[in-house]
Length: 184
Image 1 (cartoon, rainbow, N blue to C red):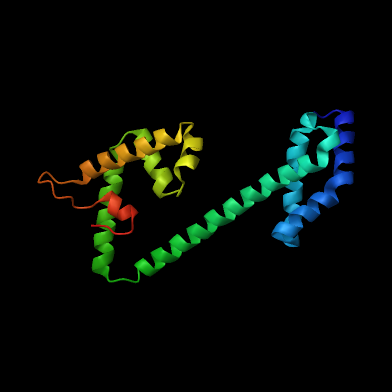
Image 2: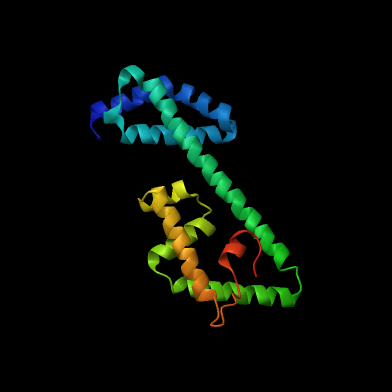
């Protein structure tokens, strides 16, 4: 891909369409981040230079730009969720020591039980709880259908709940309740 002809095509592509791509990005994410996004677009175009249909290259570049921006928005959204979680943890540790100790004990019990599940059960539950992915997104990560994800999640939760249940049958901690915001 490093031939002189390929380099010339890329330079021509860049010179002819960079301003359009930059404008597309700037109108959606602001000028301060648009340069970096436009550079990502042309990096993708360079890797895929042999796929370019030159008659429709401009909309093709906009399609790549749309994907680059979608990735940035997802990343920003994840970062925002992480910041909210960290802020929630900071508030949590402002609670009384007794509450924090009980919660840490429950977390340890759940993590220990999680480690006793199969790898796939662990991954489905982690993708659900930690990465906050929906069934369609998990199916894409694991390469299985959304129905299979739903079934595996249901079974994994049932297995986890069984592991967390003491022999007398009274559940000490319910992963379903924890997932819905109440633990106990």
